[in-house]
Image (tube, rainbow, N blue to C red; front, side):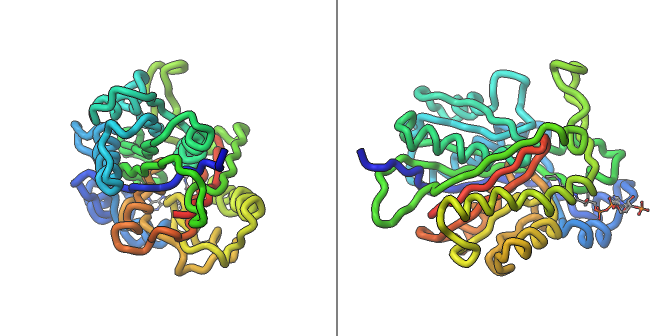
Length: 324
Ligand code: UT7
């Protein structure tokens, strides 16, 4: 049997209409400034969801946009995979909510939780189903309402995050000369780092949702120092180098982390897709939001070689190489 590849056939995004600038945060009484936030993170603004804009609402709109780009209807989808740490409910999963909202009655849907690395984990997971015949077409979604987890009294974290959703449609296709699809992926985690980035509540501990806590400097050090191992492994496994990449689309947490990682790996700065200035850190949504932005403005084209990479709480981290 011919090799099956998970080929990207659609990509879309959705952002809440409420845009909050750095200056607006300072005006609300948070002891910060546009200058500090831009200098330390590159963030200029973020989108914040309204009360009715739950994660499944954002995810459904992004998924519909991805289906539209693919020219497919919801009935064509047999796997809905949603990467999120901010589900509408403890259960049922946000993915099943999105499945129902789109009117999909067949197949299966589930959430995947790897915090900011969630979308990379979801692409790798969907690829396993598609490449082994377990599903035909997957909606892979990253959707978050991180604003709901923020402690607005903690200036070291509340200025960093935003809300949004992005999605891709992956379709199982027999490999051909174009060599399109998810070429390889590498996932890692190390739970010893829990206390550096976590939420201080949950259904099985406090019975509350909790708030996000982070030792920013420690996360920064790990992100720049260690996370590049998964990218090097993806290069090795695929027989490619930094020079072969068309685009590098990393998790969008901090411009300094992104540029330091690119420099360390020898990836030219002009190949880096940056949206952190516009969206802030949207956790699992940040990569598909960046992919959708680069698709929309014509940067990413079929045949391009795209590396995605992220690190999140746990720590969890991973990378995947996609021939678009
Ligand atoms: O999504 C994956 C996980 N997240 C990340 O990847 C984030 C990783 N970490 C970071 O991006 C950076 O560490 C931060 C942006 C969080 C912080 O930048 P930093 O350069 O590491 O700053 P710092 O924590 O060393 O703080 C420097 C100073 C401190 O003041 P003192 O102690 O030097 O007087 C902070 O109190 O900046 C102060 N500060 C602020 N000032 C104005 C912290 N937050 C703010 C703020 N506005 N919002």
